[in-house]
Amino acid sequence: MSVTIDVLVTGAAGKMGALSARTIAAQDDLRLAALVDPRKGDGGEVPWFKDVASALALTTPAAALEFSVPGAVYRNAAALLDAGVPTVVGATGLTDDQIADLSVRAETSGAGLVVVPNFALGAVLLMKFAAEAARYYEHAEIVETHEKAKIDAPSGTSLRTARLMAEAPGSALQAPPGADQPSRGLVAEGRVTIHSVRLPGAVAHQEVVFGGEDELLTLRHDSLSRRSFMPGVLLALRRVAGVHGAVTGLENLLDQ
Image (cartoon, rainbow, N blue to C red; front, side):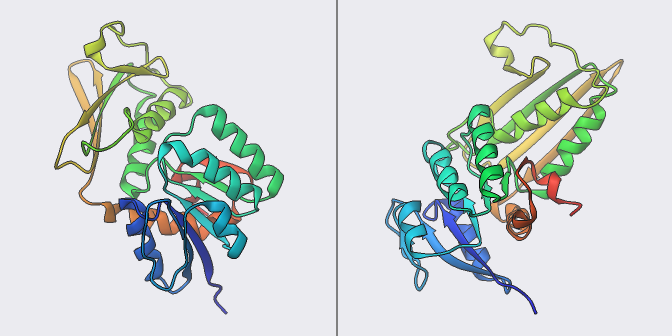
């Protein structure tokens, strides 16, 4: 007998939150239990709340998807974990200290936490390939392009990619030259330069370029619409209850 997972979605009035809610509602094994957003919205038969506390007072979700604004993501995720709700965080804006604190809350409550910088399966694979290539190249740069309305720069995806590249076992990457020149971009992890582009017409695009002796290796992923993120959203929601403690990155769920 299949089990239906009741899901709470925060940031439900936003583009990603609204699309995720519609996608969840179309699944046989997932059910929208609550929609949360201080902005006015119409959830139809699904109850709509202005904050997480109000939603938890009247509903009992089995999983939560956090897609609120950067200023609210930590507060919302903390409240959900403290209530014992396995939580998938797709919103950006968490600091390393906040993620560490949320990890402790997840361990304490027994509710799994998955922080996902990018839900596109292709983007996750690009990160894995880039980490592998970092073992063989001393120099690499990232160019990430998003829609002009994206608040944060660099993107969470590019920062995660840079960290995986720098921390890869046997990584050969060295500090880039010209790191003190503002036009050269932001140096992440001391070894990978990131260039952020914000333009109308873009969705989510990332290119990692490795330079070697008389050669360039380019890895690129393009999300052509937000629908490309939905398979990853569904995967995370279906598996977050089985996570012990906290993990960062969808790649941690691919082989479960």
